[in-house]
Amino acid sequence: MPKLIFLPHDDICPEGVVIDVASGISICDAALQHGIDIEHACEKSCACTTCHVYIREGFDTLDEATDLEEDYLDKAWGVDPDSRLSCQAKVGVADLVIELPKYTINMVSEHH
Image 1 (cartoon, rainbow, N blue to C red):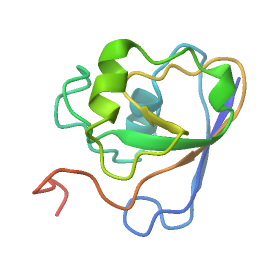
Image 2: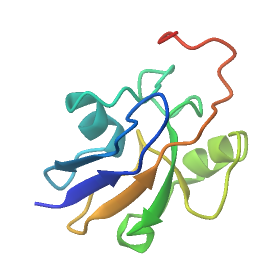
Image 3: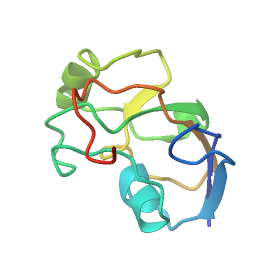
Image 4: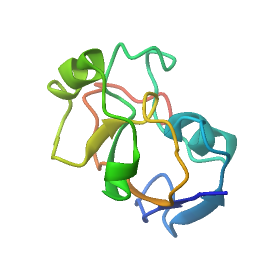
């Protein structure tokens, strides 16, 4: 089983988290199932950018982003070459190191 290694994030997982997941699950679903509250304002339908993450290791093992995902990533805060929407990126067979952005474009977070 691949591991998802979430780097520390001040609000969501201050200590960082390592979880074992099944291949084929989205990063967002895996995180939510393990208590990592990634925002997902569009309910994981690839209609916003609130679940944006950085894949710091293992990016090349993911399937390529669709054109729709790329279009939404263009609107996300702080995008870099390692950016993906966690609702669209499916875990393969390799471990992934994931960084959660400090901000999203959400004006109001449901968690605060």
